[in-house]
Amino acid sequence: MAESVNARKLKIAVDAMGGDYAPATVVEGALAALRESNNRFEIIFVGDEKKIKEELKKHESTGLNFSIVDAPQVIEMDDIPTIALRRKKNSSIVVGMKLHSDGEVDAFASAGNTGAVLIAATFILGRIEGISRPTIGSVLPTEAGTKSIMLDVGANVDCKPHHLLEFAIMGHIYSNMMLGQKNPKVALLNIGEEGTKGSEVILQTYRLLSESKLNFIGNVEGRDILLGKADVIVCDGFVGNIVLKFAESVLGVLKRRLRNYAVKNIFRKLTFGFLARGLRKALKEFDYQEYGGVPFLGVNGVAVIGHGSSSAVAIKNMIYRAEEMVQKKINQRIKEALKNYKLKTEV
Image 1 (tube, rainbow, N blue to C red):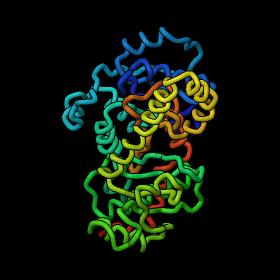
Image 2: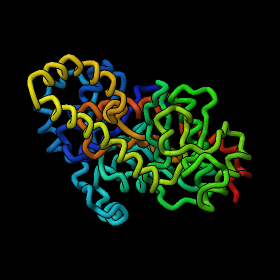
Image 3: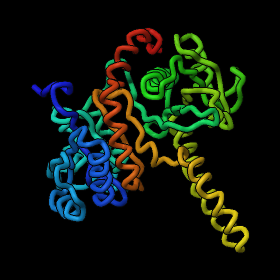
């Protein structure tokens, strides 16, 4: 039987082969997390041992708390997840997820093929009782200075009303435990605020949320997402993923536009130079790298998914998110909360 997390140092398996720049950024980011946290946890690099060791040679790692589990196969970003998981059983995703399932580690973090991570988590870790579809949520900053979570953002593109209710429940728990909202305001993303708008699925979901014990405030529109009107924003993964990818692109476009504006003449360049520090600080929280990864909610374990283009900073913060998820026992709390909604989800 695996040791209790409280009886030993927390262990986080990190997919060393996951991401566009793996294993370089993964190794760099994980070592940075260990240094910064003063070895608060242990990192288990899962991946091609030879390549990982080559990367480790580039960094000072003496005294840092890590080990390596060899997993020579790699699930590429363009692999079909279901096929890849069957054919590449010695891949970093499968091996890392099995380490978690077997109790050898307390969490798994990856910036690799999102679909493969989601399917592996669902079938290797298993779903929490009462959850028909696990979900991924993305944390977004708001104008009000708070953070909200939007879910689903890509795991489920075709949802029924009770799936969306489950997402709302999981989002409520996450907002409360991870983002510090005492009674999170839950809203449904729609094309209008009126309760009579939207598709049949949205109308039925509106009814279920209205009848639930959640602090449901009704519909919100796309323009409301960053205003802080709601702490939990519910939508299907098709809509959520489009919104998320659009939001991620805005910061990059804005930075490039400002740079292009500044280089036009010396006066603009000087003005931009004076403003640059303040702008960087103001826009920092809109950078996905600062949060690191998004949680996979509704499975019997902790799986955190990072952006494929994650830098070392993003990898470091992804590891911190995994640690926080374990410490606050988010999925266990979701399991407990679902007992109050059992009858509501049977529709």
